[in-house]
Image (cartoon, rainbow, N blue to C red; front, top):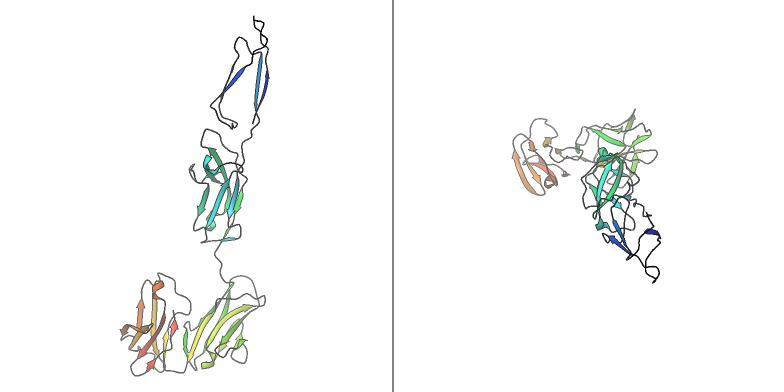
Length: 323
């Protein structure tokens, strides 16, 4: 607020005594900031001012940057930075955003800077400053807020299966290994079978060679969910494996298919590795009839998700697999 120190001596040829001065402020703002220009007029009928002193004690406000959400941030998420000037009306200010002293956006009325989707390149120190809409007055620069964006969460290990398909014939062999993303150790292949048992790779159903679990002769009871688990409790993504004693299987990718990729499905006969004429189904509907035993779906999308299987008129049909 304005502090006034006014000392006046009035001289008049009349005997009525001292006269009362009249002070006028222009523009008639109720709040004045450093750097703004005002005109003060002091009128004293029949007298003169010997001394006038004015001092502006109003400091420029300092904004605060609020980061939302205020937790660990990963690529692909949405981040909002909000510039708050305490004790001021939001609508009185325009805002500029800076990252390491580089302007992020032109002055705008918006006090929020939204990043979606955020990436690791957005990591850095962010500050903001306000400019009052009424004049040339600027706020101070805010203290910096540090935004750290990490790569999207991924499992610390992956389960690798060979042959790389969901369905397998009984008596076939299968190898499973844990591909570790870091230097962590102590990873074990585990499974949850259809009979409700959870167990590690062992002499009961497999043998360990180095970091690989081998099943030399698959049985129907080997169907289940397999994954890698560390001594500290870390887990890989689980994978479903189906073992059938039938004569037909559907070869499909063991890992999820990414949108935009090409999906190839093959219908295989137990006793003959040559192409098998087959009908391909999805959710009880015939998709294609192929004499080559192979069906291709280019540029897959979310709508292609479903239960797939194949069928031969004489040799039977495969189990169903979710893709």
